[in-house]
Figure 1 (cartoon, one colour):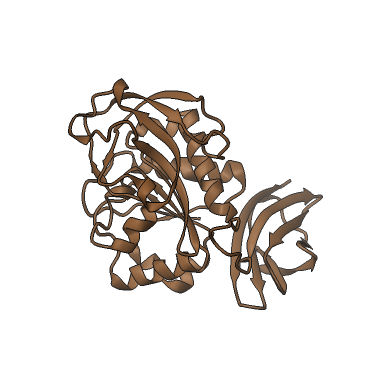
Figure 2 (figure 1 turned 135 degrees about the vertical axis):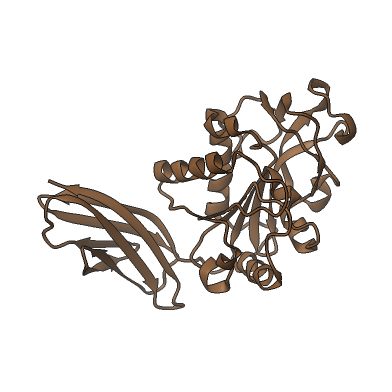
Length: 312
């Protein structure tokens, strides 16, 4: 997945902690993470490399017209979006993005504790949470209630537990939601302003659940099924003697081929069904990075992954 944290407005001091946290979640849960603040990453060809794009604490107008068009095409092609906190304070002059994120923020009071009620307890991003979750963050109000956009509300704020002031929304104050949108899918949480958020086990579990929702892409009654996209479900590298056995499990690939590159040498992956296997040549003792490249011959889609191994 791609983590995008460019800002053209307020810049959160928590961005480095947020990027590091998503990288750590990737390492712990078998998905690769690229991070950038370069809007040049938003091209049709480059976005096709990713199963999901995270707008992490972005603010302001961060994409030009060409990049916006590429991102719309990515979502319409089955891509996924994860928005964190000020992703709802981003691209306010781009109506399509407003519908993708679900609602734009209206502002916020001071950072303070508040109680959150879990509305969808069986969702991946709320299942690890208590039914009543009290935590400290910067609590957005929203210009519109995202329910009007047809989202599935996952959590709401209890405004009786904090001083919402001018940003109150009354008895229904959604604070996290998800929805199928324009051929793709989107998940948003208003949490994550503070640096401390990214070391909170429950907030990290909430964020990981949102990422898992984005990466899963199941078809629903509201959105017709589309042809599955190439996805690397797992890549394992096991040292055997001084050689490395690589096993790649994929889905959505019609005519798969692939290679493993290490130390300037290339070995082919042999695919049977959804599993590809390869054995490297003998390696000298040391720490080596393996690069796995899988290509779908039916549509030229390509996915890459890297793994480090130690040969003794």
